[in-house]
Amino acid sequence: MAAPIIVWFRNELRLADHPALSAAAETGAAILPLYILDDATPGRFRVGGASRWWLHDSLAALGKDLAKRGGRLCLRQGNAPDVLTTLLAETGASGIYATCMYEPWEPALEKAVAKACQARGADFRLFGGRLLYEPDAILAGDGNPYRVFTPFWKACLAADPPRAPIAVPKLKIFAEAESDRLDAWKLQHTRPDWAGGLRETWCPGEAAALARLGAFIDNGLANYADGRNRLDLDETSRLSPYLHFGEISPTQVWSAITHVAESVGASAERGAEAYLRELGWREFSHHLLYHFPNMPSEPLRCEFADFPWADDPTALAAWQKGNTGYPIVDAAMRELWHTGFMHNRARMIVASFLVKHLLIPWQSGANWFLDTLVDADLANNSASWQWVAGSGADAAPYFRIFNPVLQGAKFDPDGAYVQRFVPELGALPAPDIHAPWEATELVLAQAGVALGRTYPKPIVDHAKARARALAAFDAIRRS
Image 1 (tube, rainbow, N blue to C red):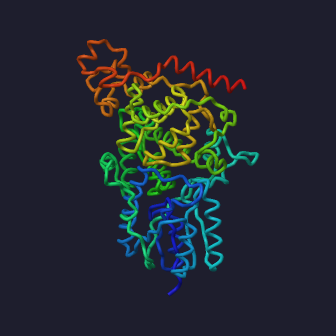
Image 2 (image 1 turned 135 degrees about the horizontal axis):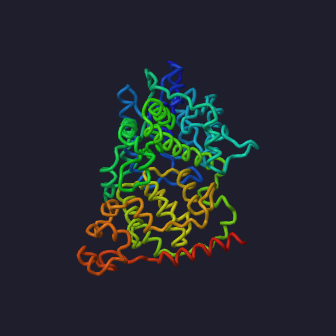
Image 3 (image 1 turned 180 degrees about the vertical axis):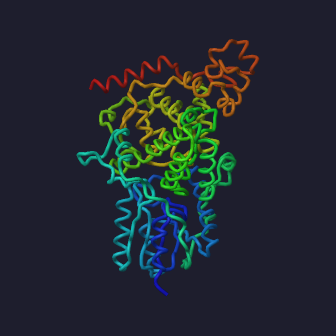
């Protein structure tokens, strides 16, 4: 029998539209499906708690999908080049096929794997699949990467359309190797079991990803353009964790959305255009990370290196726990803790509050999100936090400081979102729920709200915090 090919599943935990898997299947060689839990590569960001919970169920789902076809997912833990070197020796594999990754530590890691393969006379082949366009394929006229989204997106739309998705290949022959037990990795803590809200909210896996896409197209796409910013409505796709773990590809999403847009009415067409633009922001973020690998830790705009950030652990803890006294901020932070997710509009509100009301460094917020989000994507997370802080590519202007009361009234007009996640304010009428400190004593008493006891008073005054932030931003602008 011919030597097997190792298909290294990275963050591509699916069988459909998996170019590396399809290419391996086409050779006719036996396939060894492999996933490596790598917490040892230098410079790698640690996978956060919420993402580790998702990863467990996603790997379990992938294992079942392979088992239905007669295969077994091999699980190994350790530094990826070392694990792959060992596995090449154990199996005599003729090659390793994998999907390109774009995080800062990946070039050195992939170089080490290529060297290990060369030493054993094995092929190391990398394939696309994580993005619509490879980062070097979309560049400005001068050959440099785009730093502003609109011209970047226009260049994407002017390029050849993304390729068509690839069907699940016929997987006939599998190889096996000694494997870790998934439960032994202890990705899901049981003592204490803090993941009840995650289980209630999510079902990881490729089948669930495709079902979620179908449900969004059927029920949400027509209203997406107008309703996507509403916090009290379910008008978004919630595909981000499935995209992050590669349980569905951006090419699959692009194909499905564009197909619908061509065959339905104007409202769905508007929704499709708006949604594809958001997919473009994901693309832009990954291209930025590829070209600017220090983006997760350093400001893209160098003047922000001297920004007078505050060191305030008490305020940071209040923000993390959803106890700032601003209901829309607290609702969003509590949703994050309970479900591992936060609506994009809410992410902008809470990020603006942290970096502009509290003057706490954006890196502190980005790190918290990486630990608590099920879609903790390094590229999206870093680019978005820098955008809000004003330090990144195509960043929000420094003087754009969200008023959390007005944001709540606009995007949660009846207070349903706050009532869900801040139930101690649930009896307050809509006009008061976003600013309970402005309610009369009678209204507060009737609602059972005692500010400072049952719900905190605001930890900062909006007007004073805004003035302080503007002064700080103006100082670095002048310097």
